[in-house]
Image (cartoon, rainbow, N blue to C red; front, top):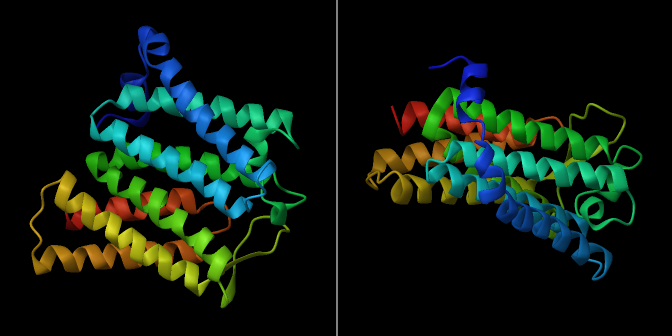
Length: 247
């Protein structure tokens, strides 16, 4: 395994990739964020939904790029997505890039709860890929699909709420209904990747391990500090998958 900085340097995009692929990633990444903001500002869709549309798109794009083995392209997509997040933070209230992911319940720390989850996403993705290789794909799916299911389900059907740790004064809660959705969707995503991406056989042993990883993912999401689950929900499932499914 190369050291971390060697890993980054080896996979940094080549100059020609910035114009060969960068425009496409800018249109896609910026378009998803803009459209999510449009849904909130113009159609009054709840931020719990618009934020997860962007979240879902970013993680599934990362999954598709890394599945193709293009790590330098993944770095490029991450860099371009970061520019749009930064633009939203600078432009603030009323801008579609900002409104797409700025939760009203996070006031007065809305920017903090944009920056921290995004940094957690980058940290989780980089460390997961560096430490666990292809098993990081399981982390992308758990964070991108499982975690993305929790907030909309909790927003719509969450009746049984519980408090979670937060590193600011904002009171953070999740719901049992949302956590159940995290478990179900994470398990389905892990199973799909195991069978379709990695061609693992659907034996009772594999299915049991998938259920275990999905359950651990739901527990991790439930106890992670508000804003940091984008890292923990990538790293723990990737680690478990590397041990149990891809030894």
